Image (cartoon, rainbow, N blue to C red; front, top):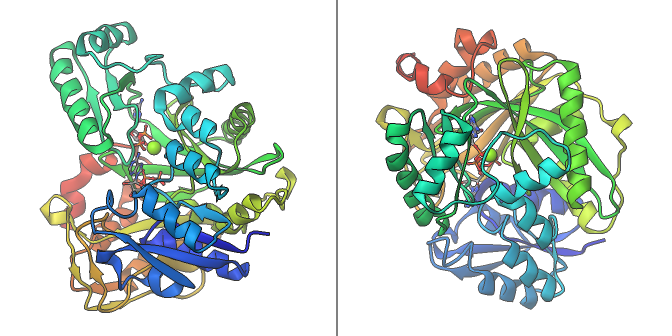
Length: 451
Ligand code: ADP
Ligand code: ADP
Ligand code: MG
């Protein structure tokens, strides 16, 4: 069993990993930037090492400093969390060459699945249904244009190395293609240091439904059901829930089977997510795989009873999966809201600053995963997520009313938050009656902001 790990992340997910490790008697080494010296993950870990300045390039993505900290502390493994180095194959290779286990799939697997175009090629070979689109990455706008014409408008232009909803543009007609391609490509150059793009059919009015998978080092692969992450703003998830009340049992099983087949095909290890979009006729299409733990993993934990982060640590220690597909039963309904320090009234602009006071809701079936405390300074250098409020009820109706109740109790003072906006969203009649698609927030924004 692994004895000591380094947690190569910050914020809520670093705290989540440290808690799971402690419950398994695994020692933890936190890393932090100079801006994060007072952060909760630094205080909760057994050891902490400053790895650089506030900019994440200097600290949380500084591979040499992170590996030096890991070697100095003699850790067995590194947990990357999400974002930062979590899908960086070069970092995984560096860990492997230092004899440190990377808690996730191997580098070749990340190369295959971490890039959106490579991943789609592998998924076609594995028999998974994918969105029609370009086979190879594109850098020239005229090549992209020909591709878009052969696919047929509308199309979506994506950064091959994209994530977090960035580097992406929807294009409805020939006339706007060139400018949208350049916008997306420039965003990709800035955010991901890459000009590789690809183009796929834009599926209109879809739901985003993804399958959580988990695999050990011996080729055993399971799926833990789906999460419905359709409520998005600018292609980023805002609320996630499980199970999805949109798909039939038959489609659910088919998507689960394809996700397991996909992982077996690429030799996947550890936790991952296969993301699909589902059109109004319930036809599903693979869009990407996230080869890491995801922000929204708690909703799956709430309905299955499994601790996915602990399972990740056990798998990395060489244990076989602690459950079989037959052991996985789904109980009730779970919903997660991402609580952000941002100002919905000002185009959701981030709202960094000092948190003066906060009150966390409690009660039956309420969970709050977070790193905040009174007096904590929310830094402008990182993303604005303050935590995740998760509820579990016996059915969707109960979970929704529990979420409204919990959001009503949640108080955060000192910075602006999206709590009121989330309250409006979970009480919205179309959300309650399950009539929405991925563009719902954009279309209903003015009304939601008035509540
Ligand atoms: P999830 O699918 O887990 O909800 P998100 O897309 O919301 O993932 O990303 C989780 C975090 O990781 C966010 O902070 C996001 O900005 C960051 N992130 C995701 N992909 C990348 C990437 N390729 N490069 C840098 N950061 C990323
Ligand atoms: P990211 O790496 O940023 O998460 P994804 O490829 O997962 O990028 O896409 C993010 C979101 O964009 C999806 O959840 C979905 O709402 C929308 N999207 C992506 N591809 C398509 C598509 N082909 N058709 C319609 N919507 C799409
Ligand atoms: Mg995605």
